[in-house]
Length: 290
Length: 213
Image (tube, rainbow over all chains, first blue to last red; front, side):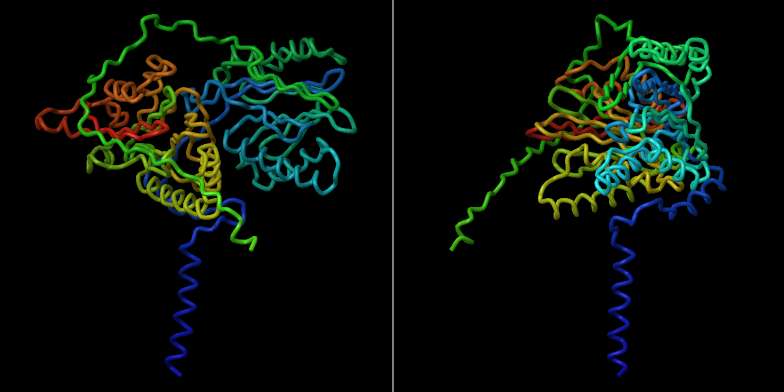
């Protein structure tokens, strides 16, 4: 009897152990298991790292035939520019795009997540996605994290009900506007919009105004810089103009360049590993045919 | 003091002509005290994919083990190696999962993708990817490395490793983090002990150099 009981106990423990050890893909959502350790480190005076932010200028405006979104392309890590040409206009649906400001990982993750959810929704309903659907998904996600997911977004698109432009704040509040700016350069860009925007702009005028607003952010705000990305969305058609304007080219390049002769750095040991060619074996199907 | 400066690290990856190079320092310290000079920061995931992990050493090792495990599972399921772009997405997802209690690690991923096209990428500690066409840097010496790379990088260098090591030579003092104290040559062999490991990977072979600077 005792032997049987022990055997059962052992089996049970083994399965518990394997559950703890195996790192299967989790069910989704955030995992908080390192939080206690991180808190302990903070209490010992060790500061957590700064995350990559897109201290940014992002804008959107509604023109005659649709929506135009614009963004700069600088990503900063504290006071350092870590990416001179990053993409801040994220794809949500074929007819909906979203510019993101704030913590870079948050904007990327939240827009990717909503994009997948909308794709599934399109498969379920068989219809083109509506901007208001993306808006509701984004705002409810951001609100449920009470602003800790630090993503400030400008969402724009054209659906069956017409062109729409919305701004979404990190705490989950939204605004529906004819023209909008977000990010650290939003004041500089808004100044341009407030003076030059009018209803019923043409495509060329709209693009020019957006570029002017972004450039104003690029040149007057330290958190924004490099190039201008523009995205024009109209009914049934979208155009993503990556690096539409590049007002900050690298002007000084040393003509001599730097040469690195061999032997400049003393090499202590070298190990060369030839990489084996991986051969694909395509099995003949005669074995099964018989 | 930031958590990244606890162990100290410096990583760099560069794209050359049909090859990539990834290099790291090998010092492991506890704040200012050096406790090892042969610490491995660059790990091989498969023949054509390397990941370097800067930051807190314990998190780097844990993260490497998790990623290697996930890659082995992928190999079993798909019967092939992961592409570097896919792997970068996997690392980004694993880091973002810990958004509110992150790993204190900044990965640098370098690999040869389809048609042996070199791919490099870096991320911050919560998985914000930065794909670059020329070079990526990470670690406590990142600011100095940014400056050095910006001025010295040229596209299509046949042996980008030498540029990596040369750039490192200039930034030797910064490997120790923001405390730029010159090394005391009281122990003359001390200087020789400051190793640096670099991998240069071409489509047909991979080369590991241990260099002095």
